[in-house]
Every structure is written in C-alpha cells, then in structure tokens.
Length: 134
Image 1 (spheres, helix red, strand yellow):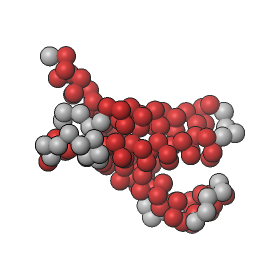
Image 2: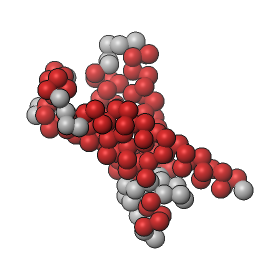
Image 3: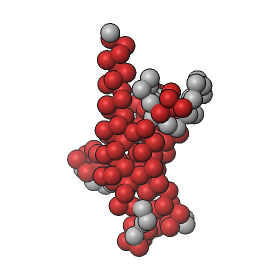
Image 4: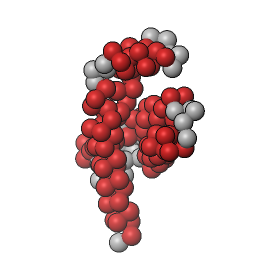
C-alpha cells in the first residue's frame, strides 16, 4: 500500500509542478518578447535571442514533459539550468525572497532528476524500457 501512495504522490507533484511551470512561467516566454531578449542579453549571454528561446522552451515544454512523465530527467536538467540562472545570476543581488521561487523549482528539478517519472507516467504507458532518459 505504501508504494502505491508514493507513486500517486509523485504523480501529483509531477503534474502540478510541471503545469505550474509551463503555464505560469513558460507560456509567456514563447515566443520571447524583445524585452525578454534584451534582459537575457543584459545578463551577459551571447546570442540572447537563442537563450531567451531556450529559457522559454525549458520552462514551457519542459514543464509539459515533466507533467506527462516523458523525458522527465532531461527536462529536469534543463529546468535546473534555467532556474539556476534565474536564482544565481538574474536574482543574485536580490534578497532570499526574490530568488526563493527559482530555488524551489531548481530543487524540484533535482528531485525529478533523481526520482524520474515514476510508475504513473506517459513513459511507462508508451515504453517498456528502463532507459532513464525516457
């Protein structure tokens, strides 16, 4: 019984977190606005349009992948990179409260990287593989 509730808890956390990231943060960055691209450039990134697209991609599509449980670990790595940039570069001089959300999403990304998609996932429905990249 305990294993089943753990799998249900992972499913709930994955779906809620993924959809919050996707629709709460990523959707507004696809396509990236000129203001967003300029802001990425001000962070020192070369090719700011490319990195603005990548941030939006990792948040929107990464969120959908995590919510569905498909390619969870690669999506989590992209999330962690984007949220690490937000926390440690964009909000580096902000008080903890200004970077807390990015740190929380980065921590959840680490959790999904370690835990994977879990039993109730699109990965397990479509593939009978133990491949951790799916």
